[in-house]
Amino acid sequence: MASDEEIIMEYEDSNGDSFEKVTTLGNIKDRSKKVAQTKEILSKRAVHTKKILSKQAVKIAKQAEEHEQFINKVTHLLGVLGFGGFCFILGARPQDVRYVYCVFYVIFVPLRWIYYRYKKWHYYLLDFCYYANTIFIIMLLFYPRNEKLFMICFSFAEGPLAWALIVWRCSLVFNSVDKIVSVFIHLLPGLVYFTIRWWDPVFLEAMHPEGSGGRASWPYAESKSYLWTWLFVVPLVAYIIWQLLYYLIVEVLRRQRLLRDPEVMTSYRELSKKAQKANSVWWRLSGLLGDQNRLFMYILFQAMFTVATTALTVPIFLSYELHVIFQVLKVSASVWNGGNFLLEVMPRQVILKEKKKMEMHPIEGQLDQSAVENSMKASNPPEVLQS
Image (cartoon, rainbow, N blue to C red; front, side):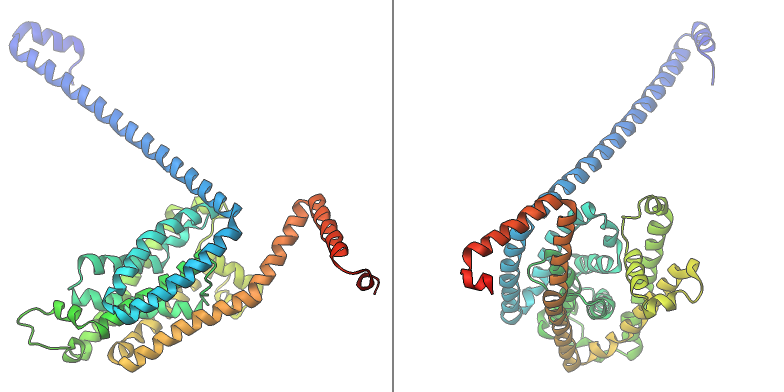
């Protein structure tokens, strides 16, 4: 590129042509500067917007914790009414269940991100269940007539997600938004695809317009290899893609972030922490290849779980009776786990919270205890106190 003196001399010698050259070079420099400035401004705005969203998420979560008891009461009321309303829709208009699911997911998953961002649990939203639910939403809203995509979604919904509801003991507790969302993320997709599969012939007919041969129930008309391909092989390929992306994001791109802050939780961190504390069979099995390979063993166990549960979707897909039994099993398991949580886990959590409050504010705790004793003396008759 010529220097400024060379450009000026060129201008004096050849007049018009060189003037155009100088003007062009100047325009290119100006444009490159403007592009660089625009990129810098946009990056700063993105960082600023991210900070604002994070601060707002923390603020909302803190306010929710301050009014936890009132929110739990309101949640219990709305949860019971909502569950009753959903059961009514399931019986009266099963074809609308998928729209209820879509509305639920679009509203509550962003709210969960806000709460999890505050708790440093936001990496949970990279788990397979959210990956699968995103595919469900895309299929139901944009590709409702795609038969093969329907079968892949069916395999996810009644395979790994459904069995995770049982194996990981998800609890239907109506006074906890977090537990309700956890249950419904795993339970609702299976119910949606159950209603489409058996109770919504209009939806199935839409997949096969004129010229399809008039088959009323398409799975029985296809070969077993076709079913195994789209209910087992292809879903496993989609699962492998998720596993690779998850490992790349969490264990490679964000590894240093996780190492700097041990409070940031992922599924592997939580499960390994609980397994180590309980010294469970899973913890001992994951250490067969040494502590340095526990993550590999965790991925291997999860892959084995996915293969086994995905294979079970084929007989469930072909049998209405088996599918009904499976729905009852899932709902019963979540309700049973909810009862165990309310009667066994929650009382222990309340005691632990009170102990922490006493440790943080011992003087206030003593005053509260003395106030309770005084109120008991004032309310009970003297003979009871003496005895």
